[in-house]
Image 1 (spheres, rainbow, N blue to C red):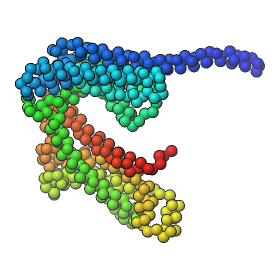
Image 2: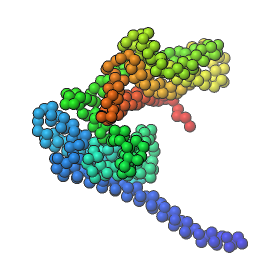
Image 3: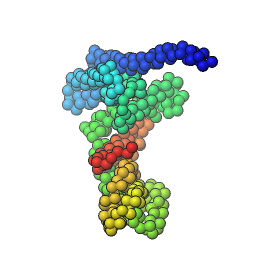
Image 4: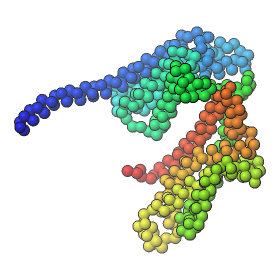
Length: 430
């Protein structure tokens, strides 16, 4: 019986090894074929824009093309000259996408286990193309979608490390691709899919980005991106002031609660209860009490900042090993020395986690606080102006929301960089 089983299993081994070799071969050649397809798509797009006539919708309606027409109108110059420059920009961007695809293909051939970082640049190139190539371009627009899908598929089938930036980029690219494909499916279905019955409900992302490079007012001298950048800076300045004040208050309360069990049990329930009150109800009261200006806006941002910092500071300061605390106390260390040498270093990861959460919360608090304060120079006022004309110009509201989200993301990234600098000597967790 044993000899029978051994002979039969032995007869299966060549088949198993052949199947394994076939899978390995397919796993090696599939990324190369995908990269070749990505290179072909980018090359076709570059050639298409290089050979297209000056009045082609793909050129005129593109984001650089619309900006070129605005510049021509501002300078009373011939539009063809500016459109020629727009063509050069578009061809250069497509050549960059082709170069990134070629570099990824080469890396897949010589070092497939380290090809993801190079292919990620190709993905970013096609994301950029998605927001500058219009739907009016026809086949070019669909080639961009195909290239974006190929780039995403490449990152999934290849090997290598995945950084936080790469993961974020992949998620954003997948969301943009799904958005555009969903719109196309809704139009093909005659608007039967949710949110596709009217074009203003889900505008194309190229229209949204293009709106940033259009005048804020019809034939106006200032682009919308310039006005939104000024408004974003004002809102961020108020949010940063509230963020610093709320962080200091939260750290002080957390340290106080960590050293006094009585104060923790007496005051912590009130800190928790303060977060159950809607900020929209408190904002008018704070503005009425403190008056118009940036002060009540900063107070509202601090209100949304202090609670996460308080809770995480308390948890972090209580996280050290009791044996380490006993060791310091055996050397008659004061509370200040214990805090500085043991509790605070152990609490830094907890505190920075709270700060990253509070960074985005402070921006939200600043925008909410600007509403009852009747400020006309922040992001809240820009959102109100754009929402009043949403059905006619939905892209303007989406562009304003995009700028507000960008402020929060950059604030989060800044806190993350500070965290990395502070914890650069801390050993990584296993």
